[in-house]
Amino acid sequence: HVARAHDLPFAAGSFDVVIASSVLHHIPDSHLDDAFSEIVRVLDEHGRLVGRDPGGNGFAASPGWFSGAVMSFRHLVYRLTRSREYPEPALGEHHHVFDADAFRQVAARHLVLTTFEHRFPFSRFVTRVRDPRVAQLARHLDARLADRGGSMFYYVAEKNYAAPTDVLTAVARAREEVEAVSDAEFLAYLQAATLEIQRLFGANRPVSGDNDSDVNHRA
Image (tube, rainbow, N blue to C red; front, side, top):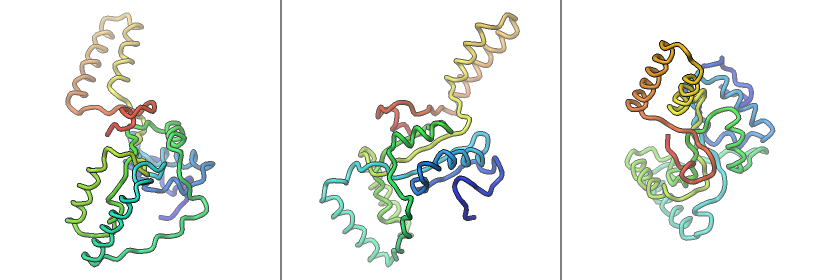
């Protein structure tokens, strides 16, 4: 289907996951809230948005040796694997690079960000080479750059997100209000169940603040 991001031709709750791969930075900032509203609408009750967009320069913006080495490697791989590179489509009049903090603020009005990372994706230079051996090498090279901030930010955002701390906080507040013993017993069981669910399945946490320890969390 071809459609506008802020007018998707799907029923509410149609998808468990929406992937927005280098899409939203082609949408005017004035339409970004509407695009997020549509994403939220078509997501299931506990759906997830996974995406990436350019935002900032980061590593490889200045060291000339890096771009020379990477592009030489890219040409070598395409030649030896007899892969064809296809021309990219025109960027369009609305193409722009996000201010990452401004993007996060818009996203947070609609969903809960559980991952937000700046990375330099080496693998994009050989993305059209359809050979599993090249893909494996590219993943290793991505991993070697995992500690460098990069020209792309990657994010995961969730609808109706709840962490164990949210449940435990609600339980603690409820305990202050209940009078019946049976109600207090139920809340104690609910607290124990929450801790057991956390032990069994682990827990994500939302992104908060600008500290690197927050934004580098992996869901």
